[in-house]
Image (cartoon, helix red, strand yellow):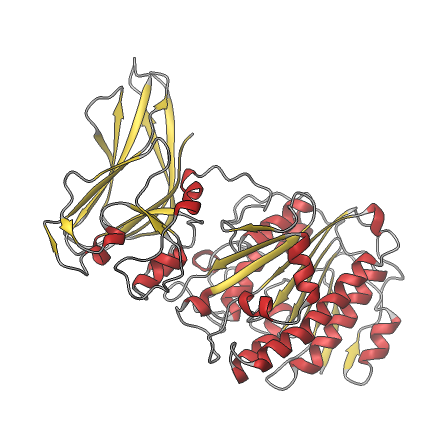
Amino acid sequence: MRTVMPGRGRRSYAVVAAAAALLVGTVQIDAPQATAAAAGGTDKVLVIGLDGTNLDRVKAADAPNLKRLMAEGMTAESTLYSRPMADTSSGPGWSTIATGVWPDKHGVKNNSFSGKQFGMYPDFLTRMENANPSLNTYAAADWEPITSTDQNGPIFGSAVDKRLSLKGDANGYGVEDPKIATAAANELRNGNPDASYVYFGEIDIAGHNHGAASQQYLATIKRVDALVGQVLTAVTSRATYAQENWKILVTTDHGHTDAGGHGGSSIKERGTFVIAKGPGIAAGSVRHDVRLVDVAATALKHVGVATGGIDGSPLDSPDNDAFNGLRSSLQTRVDESGIPSSVRGFTHTPPSGWSVDNSRMGTGGVTEWRGWAFATDEFWSPSQRDQWRELNVRNRDVFAVADSDEWSDKTFTGSYDSTLVTPTWPVTGGTSRSLRFQTHYHHESGQTAQVLVSYNGGTPAVVKSFTADTVAQWQNITLQVPAGATDVQVSFRYAGNNNWYWTLDNVWLA
């Protein structure tokens, strides 16, 4: 029996008559416990999830509602992890979106949900309930682990005030998605949810049955786009809409190959996106520094709930990373053959004030990786798949990479030995400062990765050496500034001989 379940929080809503009439005979409706929603705030957020949707196919489809959102707001492509962090499947994908943390924290690696850590890293609606019980929350989905309390999840926990959980399958999403749209539209128009999540699954089934390159996939995007329009119209039709402050986000959990399918490490399978509209988001903007974990962070901040302890950043957070400014100077491939010739994704030119010392560097090798380079994930990770490059999830946009493994794939002499040097930063003698950066380091015996510090132009001294795998982690190194020092410069030296790699991002001195 498919069931509409009021939440187990402090409030529940009456099911509106129109939704009840639509679902009669197929859905059991629990008895209403209240006659009206409690008054909510004016800051409201709606997250719409489109399972298994490729952004390039949305752009090719007849999808006026999604394209209007893109024109009126922001569009950001992004990439996922792959194994061994997690499969590119729905369980890890929606868990990442809902919790705002990556699979190495929330623990969901596949659709079995074995190892889930939702108690430690709850979904954004539950976080809202825990922080401010007066907020009204709503979730509707036809993939059961998202909202059903008796399945592997639920990803959205029992604290959510009201939920609609229908059972979709390979033949059922085309029936269930319209029911989800009608019920959610009624709730959004006539109820008063402050934060909502609405899921549609049919596009994913079309990908499995026909492939993302098919006309059937495009036709399904068109049908689901109409459902998205139905939900968006419900928002703008609210009697109080003019006095409210809405943020709308649309996202997906994974992509699909052209032939159909996902779970692996190809860029098509790892491809995701975030479309967003609302205050602080420029119309028609395109960004490259957004990750799926940012959906939860954005939703939380918009309704006034703290985002501490999650991996995501709100979309209106400033981006001060010097490496990201290099995007306009990125080049297409030179020696690499596994990267599409149209992808612009690397440069050897550092940001202003930074430098690369290749005085110890061997000659020859693969041009793209001759010494420290600056690259994007969609360029670097496909250079050689399934060697943990895909796990570099906490880097954003452009990052620095030293890769002796890929450099060695073409005739070379000598060994890999390159040093990335920061600008000179002012310090005060006798104080302590924190050197912070994000790193993804894959270790093998015979290579070295060192962080060195020089004060007032003196001889650099090693303050940290990496001697084991450090997968997608933030680093915080305390520097004790010697008396009399007025400036500091940091060097990152990587040396190897056909070993692995080291990446860096968002390097700063706090």
